[in-house]
Image (cartoon, rainbow, N blue to C red):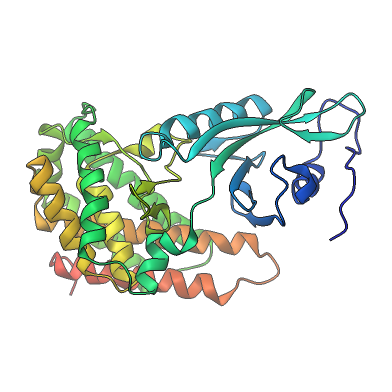
Length: 348
């Protein structure tokens, strides 16, 4: 790629996102002078990876659950992302830096001109120490899992409880189950499995309300990570947890057993079922809380339905024809949800 001095096309108060991305693709844009820049696009962000650092830029998007439509809102979310992720990755999140337009109308990263965008700046973590990669390589053992599980358990133990009634707690799940189901249907995904999963989850709420009520009554709800998946766990020393769900506090208000069930479910799907036992044994030993196995099973089924809905939503990224990858992934999560519901004796 030929690099060039980049000048924003528009002298107006805004700069097109295409110009911002084009500038940030260039190695010459970065103060540390990397050899190359890797670029990853997600639903909500552009991520730029240099040799040692990562810069994340929010897209100017708005959904029912978030609003990045203005520069001010994107700056606030970047600041929240840094603040919240420093709880479990203090040395990784370095801060928020501006993308500026200088007096000559050229763009600069962390320049002195007018800010036209804001980016989260992070340390780049070693890919081979991410939990998903270690599961794939069969290098994650009991000792590694117990080490990071202990950090998580201590985080939950120190977290302030968030008061919530049992009825409100159950209603959150009921509404989410309906939402996930509608997301599946919206993409024309009407397999019987999706219907059965939704019915099974709702049946659990109707038949076992006391299990969820007890968690609220015991004040187990805390402001947690919110998106605890293997690709967000890095087993360096000490282990760190990145990419928490920063844009909506309600999504972070969780029972730790729910959050751990989410991680356990993803690990089981990846072929590392042993991690679930280590996670919950460590949590119980540290916190003194032993969640009902039936409730943990429900949490896993619920999270599998959520991941199915998120997977099928990727079809919208490919309007010329949905890739089979996302359909297959959706089906896999629904099968997993059915398996968990079967263990809960709500299906089959």
